[in-house]
Amino acid sequence: MLAGSETPLNRSILPSNLSPLGALPARFRRPRVLIVGCGDVGQRAARLLVPRVRVLALSRDGSAAALGALRAQGIQPLVGDLDDAARLRRLAGIATHVLHLAPPPGEGEGDPRTRALVRALARRTPPLALVYGSTSGVYGDCGGAHIDETRGLRPATARARRRVAAEGHVRAFGRATGVRTSVLRIPGIYAADREGGTPRARLLRGTPVLAPQDDVYTNHIHADDLARACVLALWRGAPQRVYHASDDSALKMGDYFDLAADLYGLPRPPRVRRADAAQHLPATLLSFMGESRRLDNTRIKRELRLRLRHATPASGLLSHA
Image (cartoon, rainbow, N blue to C red; front, side):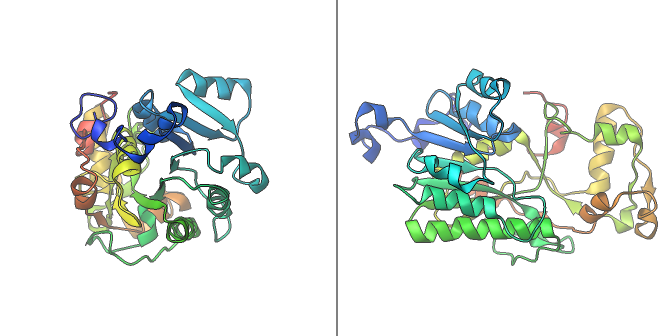
């Protein structure tokens, strides 16, 4: 449920007949939401939106199977590729709201995909709102401090710097066009019904975690709660506003894996000192263990009025709801 509503969408966050949309011909009155990057979270958001709004999704995969899977969920697919700017022109004026969840390229320092998207959206009447799903990695290491959305950005990896570039394109688009742009900074996403969405496989492999004295704070959000945050931001997000899309937990990484092990009835992972971690862990995992922060989620609950279904992973790791 969204903010306590018993319907897929609370009527208070959708246009009524008294809104400017209500004066349009009936065929245009229904809001049209374009989801760019309609993977797991995008499809969860779409399920909340259908059938109250018309949902479209940009699909890089033009196969019959991929397009049919989207149509089966009530989503109208549009074949297109963010890496092919010329084919994005058809997106101009197509939607009243845009949810952008597509990642930047896997290499380089900028994000030409987001730049191409906002340029396409600006070619005709722009949408009323654009919500971008970024990452909490834009802050870099904060030494375990509690931080809110006013914290300065210090991205330490190329991956995080690409997200900073994407945020810049989104916010510049908002300033230039008056579109209500919002950025969700997202930590680790989990869900029992999400591919790779729990620590179970890692626990079964016996992958070590850091010893308590070397451990880092990490942040989480259940995929269903993130989908709710995305939808609420489309209608309630303030212009040029950043939100931490995080739950209420403040767990160290090792404690998160210990919690999951206990819930699943599996052995807790072994602990290693940071000085020895490189012998046991790949570089990708080590990079995540080099940053520690605790996200303040007051703004998303106060301004978007998001009510978390899973306030901590203790609730969400076993849930399939």
